[in-house]
Length: 246
Image (cartoon, rainbow, N blue to C red; front, side, top):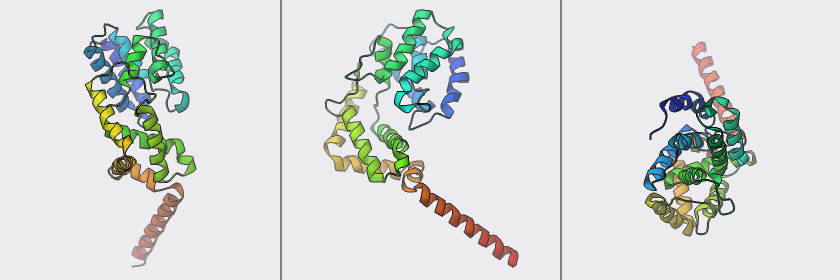
């Protein structure tokens, strides 16, 4: 990854901290690091002779607006880049325009074509290649999206199945410009799950069972959590009372 060291330092010091409070449904810094790494992996694999500094910044910025507006985060992320005059100093006016477009284009689909090789690259790098990671992110996303409905675990898994199968299933809308062996293997595995819904449900349940944070979010609804907390407080108060009485 032959990227300007000053640019990396700027992103680490100024962009990374924003993602600390932006880990909404798997869109935090860990995901960003994966997309950065994947971008350069595909860039090398397909011998793309493009600006590595631009690739780095596009990947670093592509989800930064997710917490502010999940449904329109591509545009919000792009606007946040355009508002940052400091980082734009690393690039020419034309390069900044391409970066802003590519950030928007990372959600390229069958209906929406990325406008440059940079948009095509970040869109491809943002595609899942790990089934378990995809299932975990999907569960978290669907919970956050529907939590005001107080959904059951069955509801969340159903939302997840519909979303993922429409995205990655046969004829799905996900646009992948640079298909490598990792992505093709991922598609093969995930479509086996889509073809047998019971297996998909088992896989999702297994993810939840082995993730304490998801268990706490999904199985303990707000009302029950309040009751449990009140019960624990009462028990603690009684313990103190009994101890003092002795």
